[in-house]
Image (cartoon, helix red, strand yellow):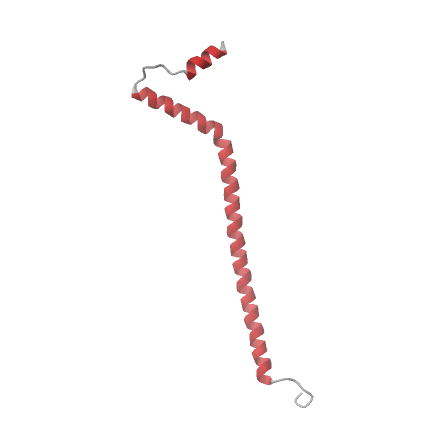
Length: 93
């Protein structure tokens, strides 16, 4: 008996008005979205987390690079001071 109702519901009548065709199409689209919404939500979540991790990684790398530049500038400053003073030998210490 279920087969008859499924066949009857899946087989559209031959003479449909444009409004009925549009309504049938919208019902089919709604059924599709209901069936696939969980899968799409999980894909969107994975995509969002991946993009977020990428952004955080680039931000962290940039901050780390800037800190290293400051450290290198300090080391360069110390090196310049050392060069200006000259080498420490027994005669000038």
